[in-house]
Amino acid sequence: MPAYWLELSVTADPETIESITEVISRYTQGGVAIEEPFELRDDGQEHTPIPGAPVTCRVWIPDDADAEQTRARIEEGLWRLRQIAPEAIGELGSKRVAEEDWANAWKEYYHPLRLGERVVVRPSWREYAPTGDQVVIELDPGMAFGTGLHPTTRNCVRLVEEATRTGDRVLDVGCGSGILSLAALKLGAASALAIDVSGVAVEATIENARLNGLAERVDARVATLEGADGEPYFPLPPGIAFLGAEIGTFDLVLANIIARVVTQLAPALLRATRPGGALIASGIIEERRAEAIGALVAAGLSDIREIVENDWVTLIGRRAAR
Image 1 (cartoon, one colour):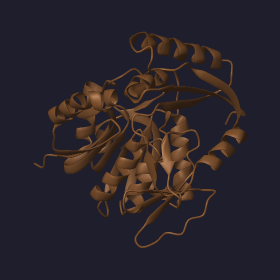
Image 2 (cartoon, helix red, strand yellow):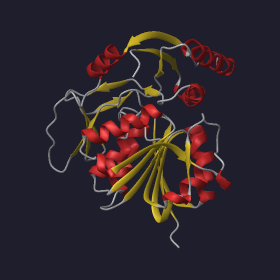
Image 3 (spheres, rainbow, N blue to C red):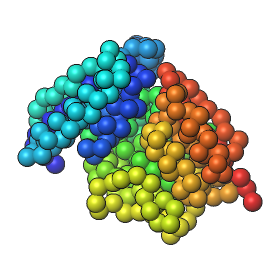
Image 4 (cartoon, rainbow, N blue to C red):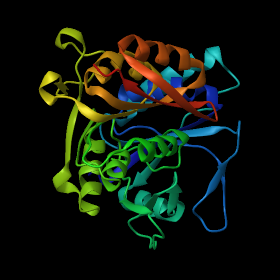
């Protein structure tokens, strides 16, 4: 890992976040951390988001010879978005952060958090005693997206609790920190294939699987799903593996990414879902809900239900049984 990172951040209105994420993701790996302001309850396990409040997007890039060019490209992309919504998007901030300082900052901010009815996420540096049938995920997010604080992750976990069956085979597309794969495994799934286009995310997933004693049940790879005729659905950096029919089908498919990619990958996501299996898709902003649902229905998803929180939509449906 680099000794120093460049932290880039921008604060904006919630409805612009997906567009900002797309811009940042063109030039970075590891995912974008989306921080919504919230009020924390006294016990530190429940928090209440503040509706409509500005949201901050953060990303960390290695502070190397390419850092300034990456920062400039992101700044230019945000400038173009700002021409459409000049009052909605703040200026790009940047600061140099030592690896150890970044880790310590997370340790102050991140507390045990209950997601759904049973799943509790515990930072590796904090103690937590589970009660009843709770399952605890020990998590060090590193610089990969996926802590449970964002509505997309939280609501995915709620649906993972509902959909996971003992012995399930799980596919996690855009795995980030591995939180969704680990939740499914803790709830009884047998194995998980976790894929991400970011090597940072895959490393975080591997390490978090090890922390939870699940390393033998998680296959984490730098990869994505291939499109029709073996072609990718969107431009990607070189060296990414494209997975197709050789991986088979899964009882539960998870895709907590963004609406554009959910839409583009819809046929591949359904091909990877066994007949009668469940698909959970999230990272979908309200204004692109119809687009994502339309693509998933066209690909074969049925019985769709949704959770909507602060303009973020999380979907669950099933591939029609033959």
